[in-house]
Length: 65
Image (cartoon, rainbow, N blue to C red; front, side, top):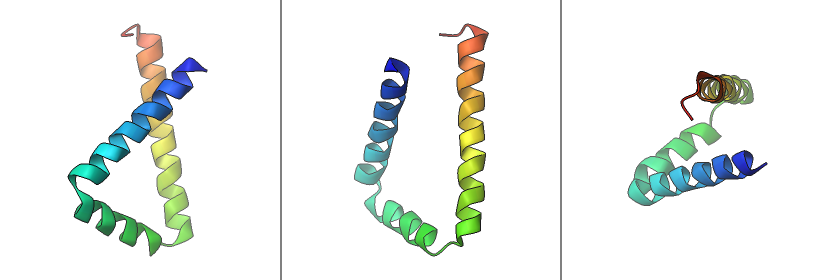
């Protein structure tokens, strides 16, 4: 559970940095995402979830950390 909370904290920190450093780009990205079809958003979300799980698996089982 502590790994999950650490990952969630990292996610919030990275998003916060993105919004603070590039507010206009963040606004544009959010606007484009809001206008995207739901099926495309679902596909992109699944792709990123699989990539994230693969990275976690690779780091955990490779012995890097």
